Structure formats: structure tokens, C-alpha cells
Image (cartoon, rainbow, N blue to C red):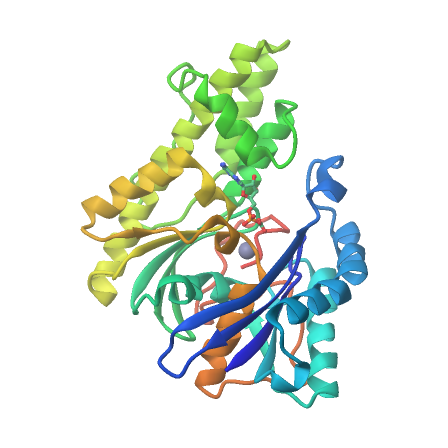
Length: 357
Ligand code: KG4
Ligand code: ZN
């Protein structure tokens, strides 16, 4: 089975061709990603309108490049999959409409993939991981703990009630005048800082649910930074180190609870899987390693190119759905919000436009 996958939900324009063999094994034939970081950097964050226009400009060329690199023609495709949400609606419309046009012209099935489902199924693409497993997804738009029980069977065990984790890193970087995207900058600055200088709050610590909250922590950093004005380089490093220490402790606590909830409902997970840009953070990785070891499970982090937004994960999720006969019609809607777990409710008090759950 050969599936073309298209991803345009945020600031990456991506297309890929993935093969799924009858035994469930996968092969990536092409995986073309064009990140729009430069277009958004001077605004210190993703600007939805700029992203949507860039997707319009780039997508045709990226799809053509993915098909060429895979060395196949459209008539060989078994299906075309697009991320139909959740995400920035302008971009989602561009990707989904393009996929519909390809499906229509080449008389190929369409698969409208949930972007979060694609992240969730990635370890089956990279290492054929068996169900059930626990996913920790932390990116600029999402912070979730999800029980991945089967294709289409996801139970959200925890989520952020305000900012996404990557978003908190980006906002802290911005308030300290560090460049965008802020996560890697904060990690770099934190390496030379004192994590104990500021006692920032550890949000949600000890709560019986597995939810996250990051906006109070971000505000605490802002207050401390304005109190210290003008900031010396050492202050910036210490603020970053103390912020990161708080995020680490909160993450370890929330995931420990998440894994306990998992165990109660689904038994021991085959693995703890981390995905999203924040999983690139070395301190977070080692915290996750400890959490996994204590829960007697293995930590799996897909390679960076498949951890962050890409077309291969959309193609793969499409292939997994296709294998179960789950295709969509031309009426499939683009969705800014799309819960992975249809039965779950968004937590109250949520006020963030990018955290598209
Ligand atoms: O998954 P991703 O590449 O894209 C989307 O959010 O769609 O995640 C990007 C996010 C950004 O917020 C970025 O600051 C954060 O991941 N990030 C990091 C690190 N590298 C990227 N956060 C903390 N530490 C890092 N090393
Ligand atoms: Zn993503």
C-alpha cells in the first residue's frame, strides 16, 4: 500500500510517500519538509495568515518533490491522506483541499487524518510498536498524555488547561529577548544557569489527574524578570534554568500520574513514547527516562525528523486507517479543533488559540 501524506496544520509544509506492507511493516519512500521558521521569526511566533499563504505557495512544489523522490506516479497511490486538523484553519484548508483535488483527479481514496493521531501512531512507523502504549506529546501547540490502545482508539489521560509546553518555552524566550523558536534557546541558556536561584511554582504538582498548567509558571518568570530589570546574561541563564527545572519537575509528576492512570485501565504500557518539538530537550528526555524506568517501561523517542511535524506521519496514519477500510468522503471538513478522544471534554478555563485539542 502506497500513501501520499500532506501536513499543513502549523508552520511546516510537508508531503511524504510511505509504503505499508501487508505484515504492517513500513518504508518511507520520501519525506519532504519545508519549515517556515524564517517567515515567522521576526514576529516571535507563528502568524496564521502568513502560514496559510506560505502553504499555498509551497505545497504544490513539495508534493511534486515527494512524488518524484519516491519515484512513483499518482496512479500507483493507494490513497492520499491529509491532516484535516486540529491546527491553524487556513493551513488545514490548504492541505485538505489539495488532497481532495488529488484524490478526485486520480480517483484515489481520501483519508482525513487527525494530526494528533498521526503523532500517536508514529512509533508504529519507526519501530512497529505494538498496542497499547502511552504517548506524551509536547509541542508548540499541544501538551497531552494519551493512551494509544488501537488505531482510532485513543484515550486522553491528561492535557494542558492553558499554554502548550513548547508555547511556554517560546513565551519565556520572548520575554527574555531570546530568538524564536525559543525552546532550544532556553535550553542553551539554562545549561549555564543556576536552577535553584528562583523558586518558581511547580504547577499541578500532586494532583490526582494528569493535567498540565503552564501559564502561571510563565507569569512567575515574567514577574521575576521585570523585578530584575535590566537583566544581566547570568540572570537570563538563571531564569531559564529555574524555569526549566520547574517544567521538568511538573512533567515528571504529571507523567507519573498519567502512567498510573494508564496502568489502572490498560495494564502496563509497551512503552512511553515522547513526540513533539519539546522532546528534543535533553533535560526533558532524561526526566522521561527516569519516569519510564520507575514505571518499568521503555522510553521511545522517534528520530527528530519524525517527532516534529512531517508528512510521513500523516501518510502512515492514512495507511493504518486505510488498512482497516477507514476512508473519508469529499465532505470531510477541515477542523481547527478536533479531539483525539471523541468522548473527552476540553478542560474548563482554556484560553489558548494554538492548543488545538
Ligand atoms: O513539534 P514542533 O516542531 O512544532 C509544532 O509545535 O507544531 O514543536 C515546536 C515547539 C516550539 O514551541 C519549540 O520552542 C519547542 O517545540 N522546542 C523545544 C526545544 N526544541 C523545540 N522546547 C524545549 N526545548 C527544546 N530543546
Ligand atoms: Zn504536531
